[in-house]
Each structure stands twice: as structure tokens, then as C-alpha cells.
Image 1 (cartoon, one colour):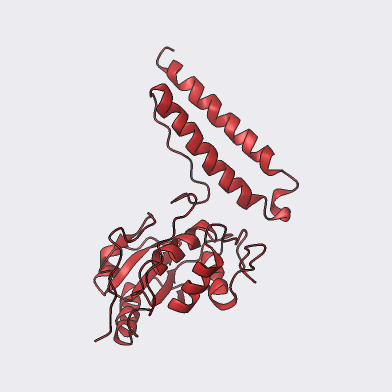
Image 2 (cartoon, rainbow, N blue to C red):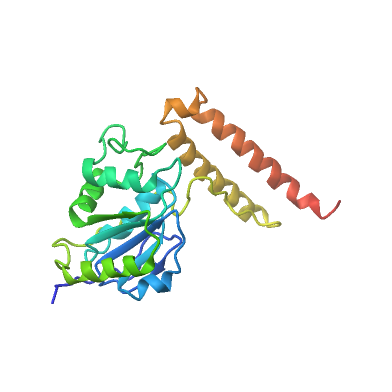
Length: 245
């Protein structure tokens, strides 16, 4: 029987749109751009199942949730590829080629903005050593995916021989294009908390966008941040008066 390691109580440490199985199972399934019925995948023995939407924050989540559980030794990429983001292709490039330590860009990745900003190089290299990636992109047949999970479980090499690494991401669970949730009414202090949180999320996304000069067309980080922050502030200021109209 394969040797297993104890998993941190808060595993997985990064939230997302996925379902959790047995943390001792060695297989994680990313459905990339497809939404599987998770229980139909978990029953075959996967430890984690869910989509991965982006080639930056999405991949950071997988890295963080994998290296915090040494029992995970395989990552299946299945379902449909995400147009533009090319998430699966970018993950395969990260696994094969790594990340440039200076630019933080995934080497030879096909995605539009393939930068790993929040995971240190040690975490990225640990991920590459710990798992084997199984490319099943284009496959949505759950019976075939289930058969592959069973096959991988049979050749489980046991837990990775190092302790879990719990990685805290700068902006947890903020997929590209996601907007901060804004309550309709609130006291002054929570009101400012929402503004601050939204500003931090916008700042992080602006940093990613301005990494690629071809995509930004000369728009500065501060310009994007100022415009988006102004819009949010205008909406927030107007909200208390909505009920008076």
C-alpha cells in the first residue's frame, strides 16, 4: 500500500469552484473550460475536481492546492480548452518548461497572459517535481476519465517525500474578469472595506494586464486602476440614494 502523509486541516487552502474528495487520493482532475458533475468524477477516486478558467490565477490555485497535499501525484487536464486563455496548454508549458524567474512568465506558454505572480519559484518547482500531468484535453467522457483515474491510482507512488507547503495567494479566488460583490447598503466602515478590497483586486489584475505590452496598447497600470476605481466609487456613492428615487 502506498505511503500517505497527513494533510493540513484547512486543505485545500485556496477556495474555488471545485468539489473535494478523499485528500489521500493521488489524482486531481481539472475540467479546464468544462463543468463536470463533480460527484460522477469523485466516485472514481479523485481528491479534487473542478474547472480552471485562467492561465495565471487559475494555475496559481492549482499549484497552491497541490503542494499543500503531498499525496497528490497526478493532475489530469480534461474537458475543453479555454479560448484565448489556453489554460491547459499553459499548464502543460509550465510543467515542461517552468517559469522565467525574472519576468514570471511561463516559458513558451500559448495563453494570452501566462504570468505566475503570486507563487515563488520554490513553490513552482515543487509542483513540477510532485505531480505528473496527464493530458486528456478534448475528453468529456466521464467513463474514460474515470478509467484513467483508476489506472493512476493503481500506480500511485505514494506521498511526495517532503512536507506540505501552504501557500497564501495575494488575491484568493479572484478569476480574471471577476467583480467584487457590493452590498446595497452598509455602515461607513464596512463600506470602505469593500472599496479597499475592490481596489486591491483591481490593482492586482492591472499588474497582470500591463505585463504584456501587446495587450495593453500603452495603457498604464495607474490609468486602468484609476478608471476602474472611479467607476466603483461612483457606483458605491450612488447606492445609498437608490432607495430615495
